[in-house]
Length: 350
Image (cartoon, one colour):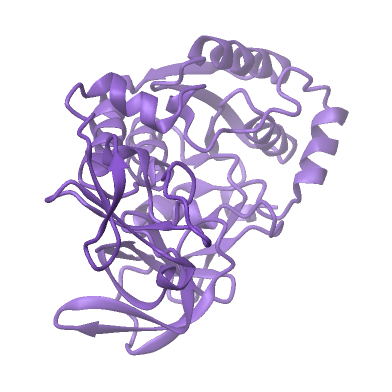
């Protein structure tokens, strides 16, 4: 339940055509807010179908729906970043960047005002501390928590955001959708990378860059040539499939050497490491906490998190795990947690 302070305020809801945003809008209506909705036109392959579903939800709830075309901004800020990352031998996380720059960035600036708040269907929570700072917290449903993908947000963005589903479980959301007869969106789940559609990452990249098919050597850590690759964009750290190197124990991708166009591989033990650096650091509070300090750190969305000390070394923020972690991947984001609270994040660098 939202604070009474926001009663009678106007809230714009980002409708995607899925069950989460539909229920979020319905909950806000039930709580007495003046609700409007908008649908973001980006680069979704099935954008027309999603738009129709969002329209059906808006009609069902009797709320106005605005279409906002952000396809140009989305290409410049998300798709170009996605392609550029792979060409540089790193594995991007477009969902985090999209939440920061598009969904809670450009769209928020276009809808607030006239709306007072922007609501989405994310499973996360926001609270305000006694210093008037906004805190980003995990969603109550630990299996669906999406706070990881919101790690790039700042105080200004959190101050105008509302997450109506933060205190709910996915099961409860489905039950509410069924009760409200929101059948057009019931059961739909958002994709990890919305703009891929049914394409693989490799096919998507190949369609946009004809020079990406550069064959090269697959080597072990000692530089011994083991096989040939058909383009580094096919691989990411920790990958086992598609290497074509027969051996008693499998090989895994350790590093993409773009400068030499070589894929460096090794064994399972080689994938584990304790320490790495991060760049593009974002502290949710806007203030660097006293360091060194120990936090729970997630190195990808499905990573369970592990305790690590954070400290600045030679002007770089260094993450030092208490125990080695598998497949630390450049381009992914390390997110720092203090209990349920997201303290900050940074992009993992080589």
